[in-house]
Image 1 (tube, helix red, strand yellow):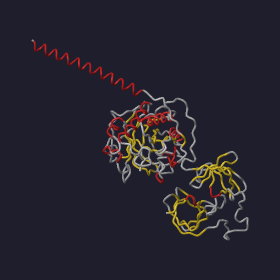
Image 2 (cartoon, helix red, strand yellow):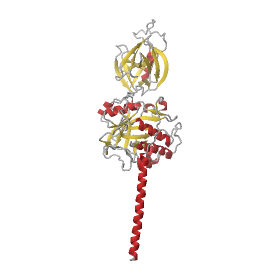
Image 3 (spheres, one colour):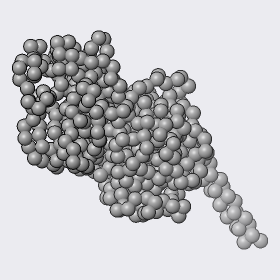
Image 4 (tube, one colour):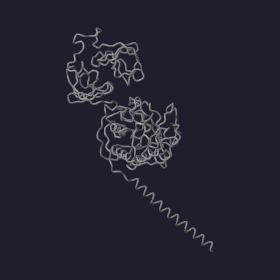
Length: 484
């Protein structure tokens, strides 16, 4: 009988202990949830990115790239991953791009027609030297147009935060900036270049950087968005540069890994860690985007689209015509050496429109000069763009030929003989004559970066090159070329 009483007493004690543990667990969970619902009231102001040299994604030929699958592809255990989505997430494979201002003015209707499901759009960055926060000048336009064309939107921010306070400032700014747009895909934290001795993050430990990333990602979650962490495979593997185990236990992972043969020929990433999205190339070709673009496969999707957090309508946004160029501000009066077309954007392509013509003797205010051969000018109260080599600050400039000089071959443009191989920096028109105003100077061909021609002459005064192309002598703007 005594043994039975002892057994009963033991059961009672065990039951009481279990009950107390359950109560304690309840309050811990409740406290954690309440903490997660909190949000910072601090707002960080970001400036327009005025200096591409400070943009961490301004990397020459790879400018705009975030980093140097089949049904049985890599998957991710989402059971413990933070998600703030109010629309149901499915396990479908979806295909997307990530873009910034470096992709230029994107034709989003063509992107949508090409079968792209989602776009991860850069909204801004913190400079790696001075720590200034800057907005991507095409972010609003890209979010607006992707949304209009039925492409689901996610965003990313390029961070160089050196402490958790800065990381939270970044997250608060991002959440406010995107609040009027339908953000269905995650908000990603991207941090690169920290091994460069010139970076303000140089010397930070992986533990310190991970805490910075966690601060950003948790604040994004607190603001009602699904957080995601982006990094290259070599940085994630074996906790090389990050506390990967901690990050992948709470957040979606977006891994960058470029196989020799892109998806779908290579059906999955060789990264063995948990990941929800794979960036498999930075050399993608997508209809509607003239520049190479990063391509991604996500191991999740959505049947519906998230509503904007802020019910107010976003202001109408237009593409930044200078987004893909670096203009230096000037303040000077110019005239045309002879005559020059004034265009709505700094391009001679089909996407630009001739709005006016500036003739020799007419004056305009030049407010900017780009490193790609264009000038920004103010003329009759409007902002236009003209080829710099056709302009001069010499108000007494005399048009060649009007002073009795000439080339003797019917052309006013004189060429210095040369013999080198050139290609287009991006794309250049080859014309029958060295002019953009002469009706006989028709475009005969167009070459793109990688296609080479032989240059036989250069005119430094007007900025033209004479080239041989398929047995023809043609002419193109020198500033659009690079020597091989």
